[in-house]
Image 1 (cartoon, rainbow, N blue to C red):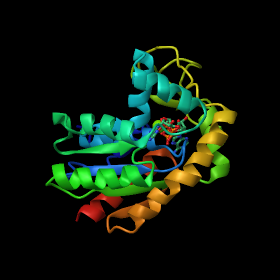
Image 2: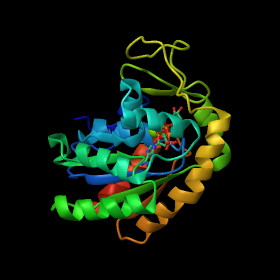
Image 3: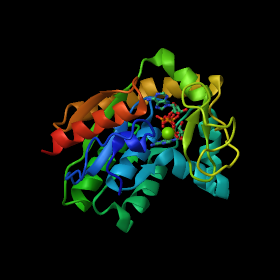
Image 4: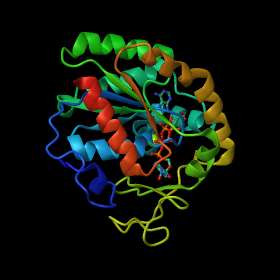
Length: 242
Ligand code: AP5
Ligand code: MG
């Protein structure tokens, strides 16, 4: 398990949280498309050694394997619509019972509707006699999100996330870690982005209000360097777990 948020982000190497004692427990990363949920989840994985559970990544894996769920998900993703709650909840339930979630997990992109949030609250109450959930909402001005989405490129091997404008790889189009050719998500177009944002405003923004009403909720400014956002999330979790 890593211990340095800033070195994990690849900049100064300064150790921000040496030997961090927090048992992270269940953590939700909430926020609009492109705010940095996936980027931040990967930082927290390095720091805490708990898994990132991204429903978007799980659905894309179904799509790539050609399952029935994957075929449906692909159609909906390209329209910026959500996959039906029960299908996503079942998929998450199957992932949450895997042994690597014992000390906690980072849910990235779930819950995205009020019924999903209610399902998760009930599931955790029934299955997790450990720590209550901590919800962190990452906020970035909407006007900056389109550039983040259309500029995003991913490594198909190690899943490292880049941005051709904001976080470019050392060699254009090539992953710094694996040397693989970077790919662009099929829903990372301006047209899909409009649909995704409409869906977010209608169905997902109320989820943030749901968790704001509970005691373990924090907002973090996502419009800062990756290491600073990560440090903000870590200190919020630390405070809310104290
Ligand atoms: P999903 O894959 O979850 O997409 P999303 O929510 O739209 O979020 P993104 O992955 O686009 O953004 P992100 O916040 O992870 O940002 P990232 O770190 O990559 O879902 C896709 C689809 O699957 C949905 O539309 C839906 O159809 C379906 N789905 C998923 N979950 C579902 C659910 N629960 N229920 C029903 N359907 C579901 O960063 C973005 C870019 O910004 C990158 O290029 C990155 O390099 C850059 N960046 C990040 N942080 C910074 C920073 N601090 N400074 C500068 N650049 C930064
Ligand atoms: Mg993501």
